[in-house]
Length: 115
Length: 112
Image (cartoon, rainbow over all chains, first blue to last red; front, side, top):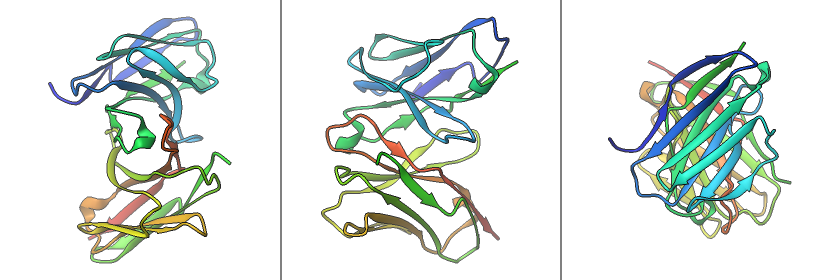
């Protein structure tokens, strides 16, 4: 496999459920990102990890909990979500800092629906 | 100051025409300006990027024009094709930052 792979592609969960989103990158990159894409805020950065250390936490509610066990894997643990959390969750990776000119490589996302 | 304002929200162009999407920013610390292209069901992908030391960058049919004094930059798609129909996002970042600030997106439709 190549690129950035996200699973599952679609997820429907109730407000009391606990679920996890998974991201895997096969590019040898050092940084991994979670973005939220919705109609209201098209591409909103949630978390950034560089070499497994969290370097950005963009005032995200605690019901979203990221985990980066190694430089190739990133998880987003979800619990007691709200209907307004329904969105497309995109994972991305980059070799270096995005601002340095290192392109972000995005996965195809997980479409989350909270009922 | 962290915002990037993008317009128009949607754009319809005839095949062979020129598509123009505009973005404006406030933060003078931004020095990297990429454009991303997103097709339905896919994640965004880098299309072209520019730094403020040049006023224009061209890659095939895609050109970024950059106006540092006005703090504006734009994407021009020459000879637009139906396959260019997608959502386009401008973005901005500081050199030492991991954080890309994205515009609100422009949905482009190129009619055959």
